Length: 215
Ligand SMILES: CCCCCCCCCCCCCC(=O)SCCNC(=O)CCNC(=O)[C@H](O)C(C)(C)COP(=O)(O)OP(=O)(O)OC[C@H]1O[C@@H](n2cnc3c(N)ncnc32)[C@H](O)[C@@H]1OP(=O)(O)O
Image (cartoon, rainbow, N blue to C red; front, top):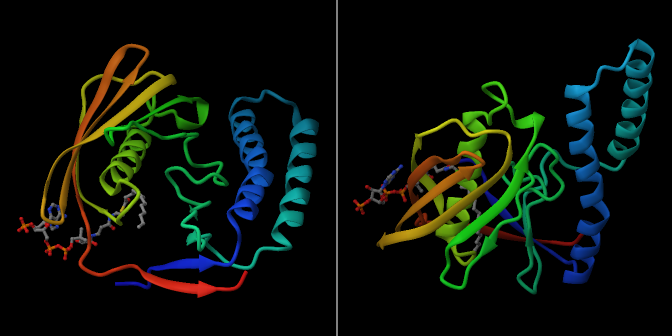
C-alpha cells in the first residue's frame, strides 16, 4: 500500500478557521468562474482577456505552492481539515458544494444545489457525481467522525434521472458487524427520489500513521 499519512500540524483551531475563512470565498468564486466558462457566449476579445487574467492570478497563487496535495491534517485540539478532498474540500472548487450535517442519532444529510458543472444527461446530474456525493456522505456517516472507514463496496440504484438544481442527500448506519459498517443512503431531487445506495465501509486493521510537523 502507498504511504497514507495523517499530519498533525502546529496550528491553533482559530488559525485553521482563519485560513479556511480566507480561502472559502475564493473557492466559491472559482466555482462561479467554472460555471461562467461553461455557459458564456462572450466574444474572442473577452475570452482572451479572461484567459490572461486567470493565468495571471493562477501564477500569483502558485508562487507559494509547496506540495502537490493538501492531505488530511489535524491539530492538537482535534480539529481536522482536508482542503483538497474531492468530495467536500473547502478549498476545492471541483468538489460539489456540500455542507454535510449530522443529526443527533448519527444519520446525515446535505442540501445543495448542483449547476452546469455537474451535468451528464441534458439538464441532469452526471451519474459519477451522484456516486461521489453518496460515497462521501456514506463514508462520513460510517466513520461517525471518530474512526477511519474505507469504502469496501458501494451499490447504487439509479431509479430516476436527477435534474440539476436543488438536491438532498441522506444517509444512516443500518448495522455493524465487526469492522464492517453497513450504510444506506438516497438522493432526492426536484422530481422526487432519484438514487438509492447501500454500502459496506470497513475500518482497516492498520491505524493511520500520524506525523507531527511544524507549519
Ligand atoms: C479518526 C479520523 C476520522 C476521520 C473521518 C473522515 C471521514 C471521511 C470520509 C471519507 C469518505 C470517502 C471514502 C472513500 O472514498 S475511501 C477510498 C476508497 N476505498 C479504498 O481505497 C479502499 C481500498 N480497499 C482496502 O483498503 C481494503 O480492501 C479494505 C480496508 C476495504 C478491506 O481490507 P481488510 O484487509 O481490512 O479486509 P479483510 O480481508 O480483513 O476483511 C474484513 C471483512 O470485510 C469484508 N470485506 C473485505 N473487503 C470488502 C469489500 N471490498 N467489500 C465488502 N466487504 C469486504 C470481508 O469479507 C471481511 O468480512 P468478514 O469475513 O469478517 O465478515
